[in-house]
Structure formats: structure tokens, C-alpha cells
Amino acid sequence: MILTTTPNVEGQNIEHYYGIVVGEAVMGANVLKDFFASVRDFVGGRSGSYEDELTKARKFAFSELEQEARIMGANAVVGIAIDYEVVGQKGSMLMVSISGTAVKLNAH
Image (cartoon, rainbow, N blue to C red; front, side, top):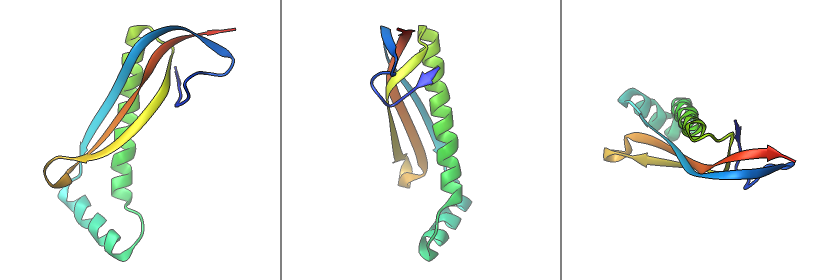
């Protein structure tokens, strides 16, 4: 499965457009991670715990997007957009939403 942010794939034609596919993941950030992240924000540096959660959420959302595209019969998803949001009460949840267009590619 080819996944790309570009509207097409060089050297291949789009034979069929199946439609928009979406993958979403919402992950909770627990209180302990929030505490250590706030300490790290105060003293500077990166928040590894949040980065890990975002990585997990992004991988899950991509997997969901790819699965939805396969079910439609696609062999690629083009025009992918990735959106990160903080949701929930007091921003306690991290959300990754990935969308794109499921297509069937046919080489020249």
C-alpha cells in the first residue's frame, strides 16, 4: 500500500478513485505523564512521554486508514493530511486524525 501526501504517484496513473478514507486515534495521557511533562516544560527539553503517545496514536491512525482503503479495494492513498488535536476535559486526550483519498494505481 502506497501512502503519500502528494496528489499522485510519479510514474503511475490513478485508475479509480474510491473516496475519502480516515484513520483516527485518541489516546489518554495519564496524570503521571502530565506531571513529568509539566516538569520538563518548566526546565526545558522535550517531553518523551507525549512524543511516545503521539507516535503510538499516529501509527494506529495510519493502520486504520490503510485498512479502510484495502477494504475498498485500493492499493494507495494519496493526498494524505495529518491533524493533531488535544481534546477532552482539560486537554487530557491526544487525537490524531489522518485522511486521504483511496485510489487504485495502474503503472504506465
